[in-house]
Length: 163
Image 1 (cartoon, helix red, strand yellow):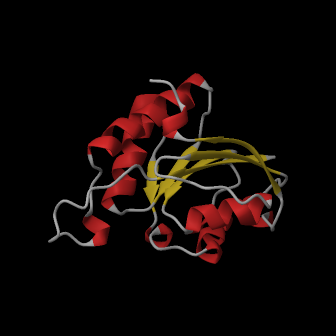
Image 2: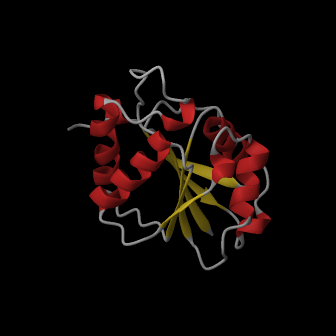
């Protein structure tokens, strides 16, 4: 069994209209939500062996803040394929994960992440900014992933978590 944590980046800023979508950083709300999700992951004893994130500024900041707040002693691998990814793109990313990785944290964007959760679990769920899905996959190898091979164990939204 593998565990996949799917985390949508925290709320981003639209303040600077000279920045590209890729360059947009987190806004004030996002800067509060990302560490909140890191604290939640630590409190729940979620322990990814690896973090794979979109390199877009808001996803990168989210991944780093979650890792640092949760005190995960793992590397973050940035993968450009996650930015503007379809479900097919995200499945390709997952299929390339080392078999040694049992628990993976994937940080990215919608609509790709919502569609990935739906593809893997059969559940249609909203993934607002900084939402975290915990999916138990009924596979031994990441390359074995197929539609509906997972069970959505939890979906956490920052607004539903006490400060």
